[in-house]
Length: 197
Image 1: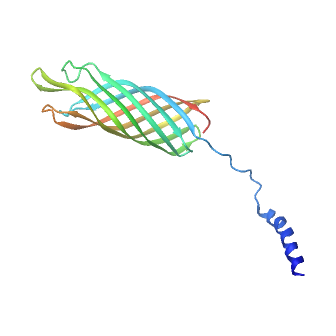
Image 2: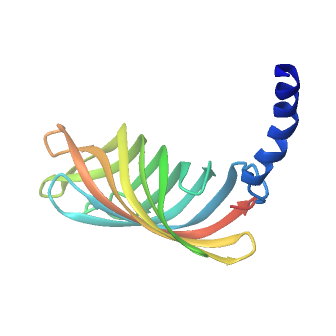
Image 3: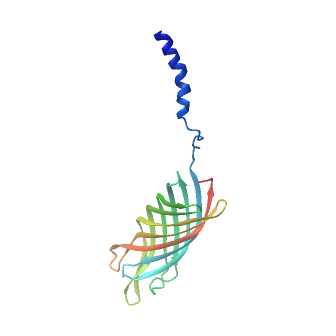
């Protein structure tokens, strides 16, 4: 009798358990989404003399979105000006940064992002010393950026991205001592998405 009860249990258990299985289809597996962006950048460069210099240039970056909230960003930008603080010396900043991206808010075709990036920046600039004399040169040091922005899908895989960063770089003051620079960078560009998010 015990063997018959166990057999009935094994036959009936799968039938009873089907009542508790939902009819929802299984979740589709998601794969990373790759994005590439290129556009314009405007950099407000802080100088050791506490004056600001505006530089214009280009920005290019790549993204890997692992899911709807997290991704990774590789950023490179180049901005220049023809005359730094009336010295006649041109100035430019070249940056290569990488770091995580977080998307806290998503409104359908529009999403907000924040990022923290770190890497290297090359600053070629000049600092007035006395009269018409100035100290010019190039400094390459560790750099980082903290910022965010908005991305909006235009059509299909094409989107537009607008953002701003606090960018930390290094350059020399008039005594050739290294000083941190607290810069602000604005970026706008078009994004092409390889895959669906």
